[in-house]
Image (tube, rainbow over all chains, first blue to last red; front, side, top):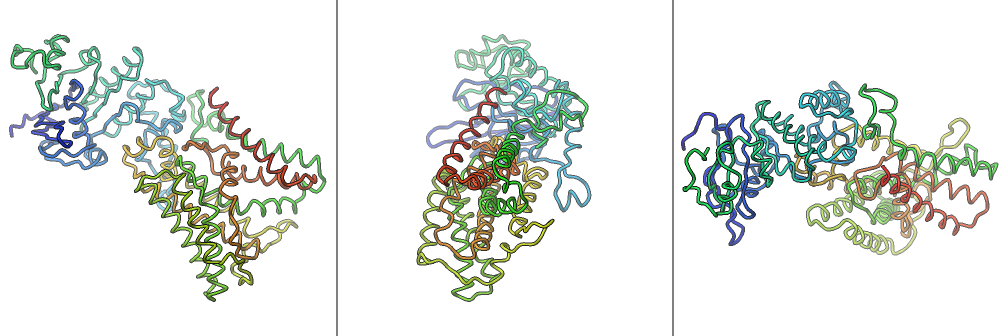
Length: 263
Length: 330
């Protein structure tokens, strides 16, 4: 097991079978520190199964996952979150009737100090509002009041809340599953900019996307999933979009690619 | 629920507009005030302390049942079994104390325990077997009704010991007789209000009703919350059973047959969404009071009770329509 020093998250030989269907067939995965790694693949390539294994949504039948060099086993998304891996889900990220501050702190609420907090379990709403405000400002998400219900926000702003929440609590990795899929062009660009800011703040990001222009605009490396394995990892600054799609669909074999395309 | 304020103005916290609840929150309260003004203009006897005390006594039982119903509806569920769990609890406490001769306090605990266990059964079937709340509680409604009838042999239980009647006793407040049961109801509302508004588990109930999957993925134990809610609702129905016994002075096996729909009426009139995740517990109290005020006021005006039911039906539809229309516009 060779370990490059700046590998944050690593998977080797992941296998997942559903009856006769093999979704993951010995997949490998590497995420470096400070990068945005896009994961792409055709339908059935094992892309979403891989991401579910990394985010704790499913338990692989075989293989191992390492976080900062240590082997980890996730039995649920909650396990993964405890280890500092936050996932932003495409649509089901927020509670619409609740405020931005409540959504940011959902499941991690702050209580008041003293007897009010310890005996009466009273929430410290003021402090949560202030921290939510500071955090959203830090990510340059322009929302005036943290007391707004999330349902009053635009789609992009809502996704901004979900991204901000994961960035606030992740210690190791942020996984984003199709964060721009439901958004218009302008809103999508806003979220891309936000993802860059998350990376620049020091957190590596795994981005799952079908949107090739977005992937090429933002990714530092592209992991191509195919037939339950990692076909290769390519460098978006060297390879073209159409060649990437050719590898993804199997029209071109990764071994035939010029070595400078690989990353 | 100032935390759910949907305002877009002003950055400085503490602005009056930010603290103001949305108009929808005031709707039930305004309706209650208008009803009071109307009936006060129609009858001299309406606006008296004694009459208000009477209204509170009349809404006491359904008001407590509606606390449990609100909790369940906030999780996007529904509880049809509430009235029957209440009746079963009240039959257990009266039969145990009168027929078996059990210590009355112990008998009360047994009654509360039985309705709580039925709540736990509702919750278990809904969370672990994943059956729809409507069907589960329809089933337990019938089961609890049958057990109540079989166990009591459809006979009313009378000659109750004093502890079971305590909450029907009154004390004088500014010259008006108030029952201890009314006080208990108000205290239960305040406790529920505090928990829902100011504690993390309370906020998780709203989150669960809003978006169950997102709430689960945030690491909140949504199944535990659901199970707790149905169990607590069962306990609340048992307390309503005790209040019912103290008010009527008997254990009545035929009680509670309309409390499921009456409590849902109170919840809906109070502005809580049947789709879950939105609403306020104090709205339910106002909703119950609206029904009570209408029944009382119309009785004072000499309107036959069947018209009171007619008007309640119209009120429910109006309340839901107003709520839906204002949301669509918003």
